[in-house]
Length: 49
Image (cartoon, rainbow, N blue to C red; front, side):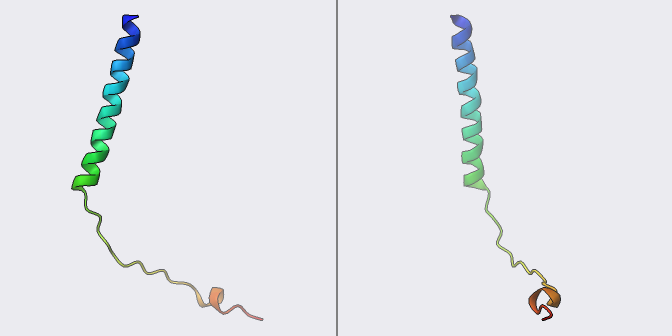
């Protein structure tokens, strides 16, 4: 039974590290807003009839 507890402890530590990393990213990383320009060819907008 000790190996089961060790396995669960390792899984809990790994999940805590992932959760802590996600919290750190949300807290410290600020997204940068920028304008996006997409050029559409006139053939796609004005289709020949």
